[in-house]
Length: 114
Length: 111
Image (cartoon, rainbow over all chains, first blue to last red; front, side, top):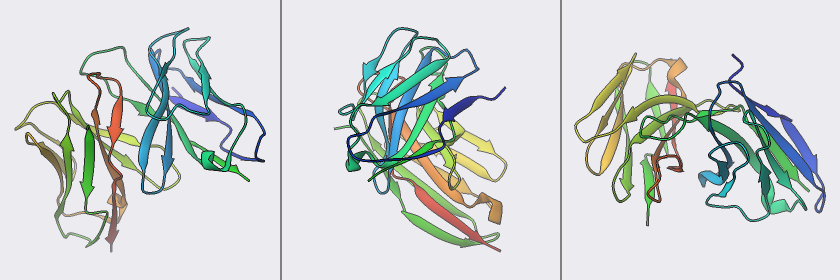
């Protein structure tokens, strides 16, 4: 089991460029999440999905879009990158519903926007 | 407003010197409290989930406890390999799957 994997590990973008971050999980989890982590801010939820074909906004969704076309994949898109989107992005996944949920995290993608 | 606050921000211990990390929260209707460990350059790794006041869970040198307003992560006789950032999180907004995280405690254990 690879668990949660993220591609790429590191990326440098210029302001205005676009990119897609890929998250894949092999645990057959229904729920998937995208977070960003910034110094002094903690992890903040960007978007999440409760199943294939569904997405919902989290705490800081502006400037990002997501898609969940397959159960095992969750894509995070930046249409026009801004320096404020420089961050470390983490994907996570969890079993369906209930208080027993535990979120399992990927290794992260480090994004620098110049 | 739902909020999670961790203290101290950083803690330096000598090997074998026990201590505690604090996580205080203000959420309506606690649906669990999660502790994670994060090593530099890696994603958070799950440690514990606590669901009700008075609950305790242990894993090696770590013990997590929960009251109605806060949780403690007790570290007994720590070793250098326990050095990491420890994060706590609680579900918010009436959901069980959306988490709000604290900013973490950076623990350094010196040999």
